[in-house]
Each structure stands twice: as structure tokens, then as C-alpha cells.
Amino acid sequence: MSARVAITGVGLVTPVGHDLDAVLDAARTGRHGVVRRPPWEGLLGIRSALVAAVSDLDLDRWPRKQVRTMGRVARLATEATERAVRAAGLDSDMLASGAVGLAYGSTHGASDAWERFARGFIEEGHFFGGGGGAYLQFMSHTCAANLALFFGVRGRVVPACAACASGSLAIGLAAEAIRAGAQDVMLAGGAEELHYITAGVFDAMGATSSGYNDRPQDSPRPFDSARDGLVLGEGAGTLVLEGWDHARARGAPILAELVGFGTNCDGVHVTAPSARGMQDAMCRALADARVSAGDVDYVSAHATATVVGDACESEATFAVFGDRAPVSSFKGHIGHTLGACGAIEAALCVGLLGAGFVPPTRNLARVGDDCAPLDYVVGAPRDARVDVALTNNFAFGGINTSLVLRRA
Image (cartoon, rainbow, N blue to C red; front, side, top):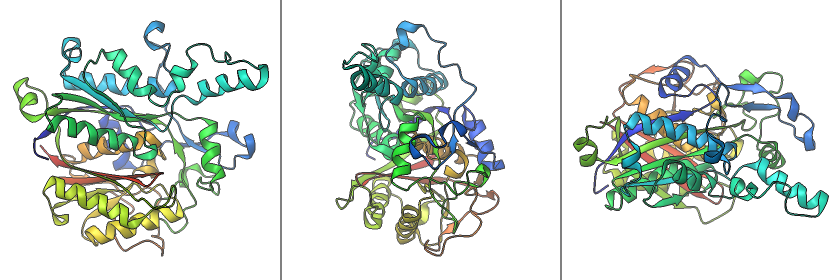
């Protein structure tokens, strides 16, 4: 990147805790958030009964006027962003100055609002089943729009709705806005909520884990020979990105530096992954960061525990790094949080840059024969100094993203 981009704040809402310390603790100890959710069993034929849900949060604590156009996904995003803004020391005057912008994404808006809206038409023949604000809760850019209004952001607002790459794409686009001189500060990240509609969609595609319904602690299993699909999760992650000189001038805490961003499209198939496309995204990020593959101390894998996806990703990662860089996926701990995963995993990498260890992939017992021979972190955390980390996310539509972070 031509201009240095500092990370000055992190806010998290996850199934294993709601701050970076809690997430790092889970990564180190193996604590997970996957549970059996009986109410979904049998609903519309959904086979998977496993989820990773967010709990212990009061998402109704704000004045109704501030959140009446927010569904659960936007409220999760608001909670994470409040935490990030507080950590970065941004006040209301700064947020409203025009120097602060926002890039945020999710796979879609609030599914329960969409359901209420649709039921009103299907069952009663009118469009008022969800009330006048239903559309504002389920529109694709509900997180970006509602966050901008909630925090009074008057700079550019960039919705980044790219399925499982939403959060990481938002972070990359935010960094580009800063290095181009368009904004001094960007709030960036992604969010996702759990809903049976989403579960049904992934289940219908044969992508969800159903063989471990009676053993939620054993799934998902990224890269494992016995993996049988993803477990849906929910959450949100927000990073505050800031021009390096701007951050130093105001005395902001600099947690890490975002040095590289690569994104591309496979241009081949809407759901089938492409190792060539993934490899190219990683190479673009490394080139943007002006580092070599040999400089990377840890790779955070997308690895959702699908059979085809994990094998393809391992092939692409091996083509770039061989067996030199330690690789693991955090989805064994919190499931696949879709639009939020890129931001949550980027935040995890921020924490790992100073933590002195790299985490194992939870539930990885025996690497699948179809997976390339990477340096998988298995079983227990590994003591390591991480100065440079690369984190990957890959999405439907062939959208690939890679971010490179460096210790500040």
C-alpha cells in the first residue's frame, strides 16, 4: 500500500465472547460456541441441528428511535462498532466531521423482517406484514446504512455485500479509501445473524454438517478427513482503520498495520471454488504488501469444513506457501459466520501479532487425503512469534479476498 494504514480499534461480538481477549482465549484453549439447536430440527427438512449463536447481549438497550430500522444483523454490527469506536477513542465530533467513512457488509439483511414482509403478502395479500420499516431492516445494505446513521458518519459509506467475503472486502475497500487520501478514518467490518432461512439454503446445497448433531463439540472439522460441512454461526467484527500519521497525531493506540489487500473474481462458477483464483488473490495481497510468502508467519484459512472448499483452498495455499507457514482455521471454534467471518478473523490476526502463539484448527485430528500437505497447526497452540499474518476469505460468485497484517 502506498500510504500506511493503522488499525486503531477492534470490536467483536462472537459465539465465544465479545472482545479480543475472549476470542484469543478461545483460540488458545479450544473453547467453542457450537451447540445443538433442537427448534430447527425437521423445520422445512433441515438436517443440520448445529449452530454457533451469540448470547449474553442486550440488543434492545438502545432507544427505539435509534434502532427501529435495525434487525438483529444491524444491531450486532452496532454493538461491535460501538466497542471498536470506544477502543479507538473516537468521539462524536470526529465521527461527524466528514473525515470518517464506513465500509460494512453482510450476506443479506434481517431474515426475520424479510419473512414478516413476505408472509403479509402471501397469506393476506398485502405488503404490510412487516410494517413500514421491514424493508429497511432486510435491505442488502442495512448494516452500512444503519451504522452510518447511528454514529453520524458523514464521509463515504461503502456497502460491501459479498457473502462470506463481505467483512474482509469491506476492510480492504476501507484501506484503499485511506491510502487514496479520501478519508482519514474508516469503520470497517461485517456482521451476520442466525436464521432458519439461511440454514435451509445451505442445507439444501448439501453444505452443512449433519453427521454430528448428537456431538456438537466435534463439528465443524476444517481440513479433517471426517469433515462433513459447515456449522452456521453469527456475530460481528469491526476494525477502525486510520491513516498512520493521523493516528499518531491524535495519540491513538496503534494495534497493527494493514499492509496488503488482494481481491479478484474466479470468473468461472457461482459456487464452485477455483484454486487458481484463490492463489491469485493471495499473490495480489502479498504484492500489495511488498512482502514475500517467506515473510508470512501465519495464514488464517477460510476453511469452512466443506469437502470441496477445504481441498481447493489447501491446494491454493500450498501453491503460494508450500509447507512453510503455519495454517489454521478459526471456524472450528465459532462456526461459519458468513459476512462477519472476514472481520472476526482479521481481528483475531491483530491479536495474534502480539500473542506469542498460533492457534490450532479445532477438531482437526487427521488431515484429509484430499488436502495439500500444508503446515497445519493441529491439537494444541504452537508457540510462535507472528510479525506478519495473511488472512483469507472466499465467497459465492468467485469473490476472493486476502489481507496482510503486520505487527505495529
